Amino acid sequence: MENNWSNEAFKGEVASGFHGKVGWASPSNIALVKYWGKKGKQIPQNPSISFALSECRTETFVTFEKSGSFGFSFFFEGQKEPAFGAKIEKFLVENQAFFPFINQLHLKVESRNTFPHSSGIASSASSMSAFVMCLLDIENQLIGKDIDLQKASYFSRLASGSAARSVYPKMALWGATNCYKGSSDEFAVSLENDIHPVFKTYRNSILIVSGETKAVSSRAGHALMEGNPYASARYAQAYDKIKSLLTALQSGDLDTFINITESEALQLHALMMCSNPSFILMKPNTLQIIEAVRDFRNETQIPLCFTLDAGPNVHLLYPENEAEKVENFIRNELVTCCNQGCWIADHVGDGPQKLL
Image (tube, rainbow, N blue to C red; front, side, top):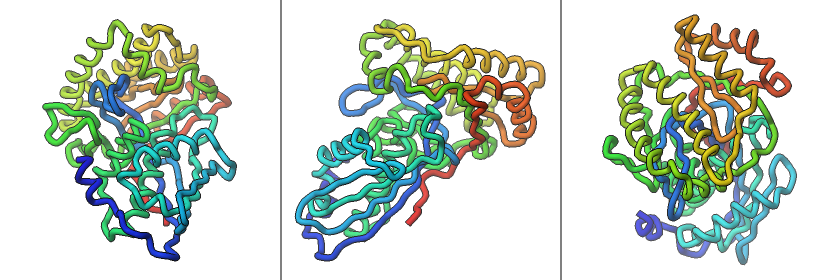
């Protein structure tokens, strides 16, 4: 796959006066079966499945012009952001064999998130996939082709693992598994055409328990899995859960969906607590929300469930036809557990969108 894309790369002389501006919005995503542990060059230890979000996305604009050599600047919400700019520049340098035309361009990258910066929502998936979409847009102005989403997923993965899943609408699977034809460790695949209609309009309300910086980065957390005593059993179990979840997604089996989704969320945090050094990223209010959600589900029989990212915030997942009841529950009982009462009403989204 690498050789094919390298051969397709534009390697000629960029025309004098070549310039313009491209813009893409790409969503964050929330994993149901988690990606936690990697090997080699951003290869997952087990497959993962995620929902693409709609409201939580990164909007990125890249202004480009012909230059005598490579030039680069990065701005986040109008301010220079050297740390993240360095991450993008490193990605470009490492992959210049696939994008040799960048050595003839100056790039000005401007990025912003639609969700609060202090919300604790991971933005690397949305930001890096949005940037890759912009990069491929520029390339395609040189070679005259449409963007290949599989290619976008491949390079998004190299930039940030979970970004591989953000280039597709609705739901995506990343990681090779015998139970889904065409699945790969190198790129994600779309599940949009293989899921029951109930999941295509699913709601995701994000309860912001804390906006503090995480005690451990996702990169460090993945590395800690190498010495985790439960890693092998976790990876094996994840393959089994992928098979069961794919079946549930196709049939609309909400009970199985709930069981797997909540089990995965809690196992993710259990693995962090069993690492060395260990980390506890849940907060007291996280546990209070989880208990309240389970009580609410038992009392009302509404198929509401929770999942967590690698932090304290809680994602509530539920069918669209239950939105009014669940949102009233959030306002009446859960909002006091949120940092400054902050929560985000989101839903399953349609993937990246071209802005310019």
